[in-house]
Image 1 (cartoon, helix red, strand yellow):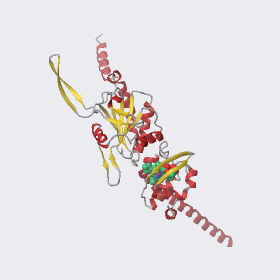
Image 2: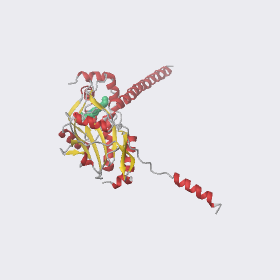
Image 3: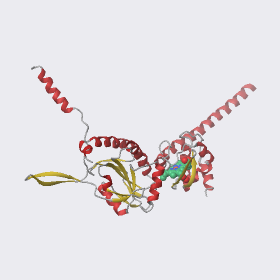
Image 4: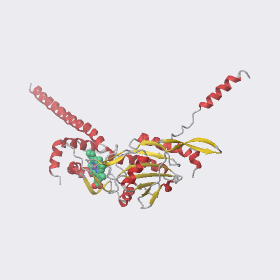
Length: 138
Length: 214
């Protein structure tokens, strides 16, 4: 009797855990596929279909370490633009990315796409996170 | 012998239909011109050609139509701060550049439509960052009126900045032959069209008239 109860509870926990896991996956997929369309419309011209950039003019989006180190600033780069010297894959870039006035949810989606494509794997960058990061833009 | 005849006729037909390299068309306005040759009046066709011009390239060298005499070339219109189609166009143009950069009878010319910002040092920096060296790809600076006028002879439209601060311009690559006639226009943002441009340049180079003219 007791055993049945315990195993029942255990089963319940597992079910919750699994569905919770897949909820996260569903959220990720939603962000990622939405982000893919936004990337094509807003970023691909410059950064390329494979995130390869353009010569020494536009940096590639394949430097996972750079993206990780600057994760909290990425939202601001899009919202406020980016200018000045940066080092990507040990190469120096000094260009200017124009401001793109995307809504926070669109920024979240496109960043989720970028940071999980082209060899990057950083998980979901969700709306809450983007809103918090945008508060701190300079 | 009788039996052979149908075979021979068939052969003649077949050879007449053998696939030939399609010649490139000549585009633009044309006008009939009548001349007198050996006392007889003959009608010829005058094709639209690119008129003379004077611009300055990224090395601060003056470039006129003369510098393109005896050369097949591709022209386009862009500006260095263009956020929309230009990066795609020049990503594709790089393929044209790489294919023909060792051919001194070939050039690419890119006219900036924003001469105020795209000064010669800005164009030089752009060329450096793009990895453009030597003289096979010129980035041309000139006054706005001249650039907008020459655009018309390439069948292109460019306009002033729109309220959003963007210039409106066509993203076409225009292929010009040694007689300065327009032989093709290609959507510069479409990699497939640019592949066709590269193939067409090879066809054009092989045309007897082109090969002969210096």
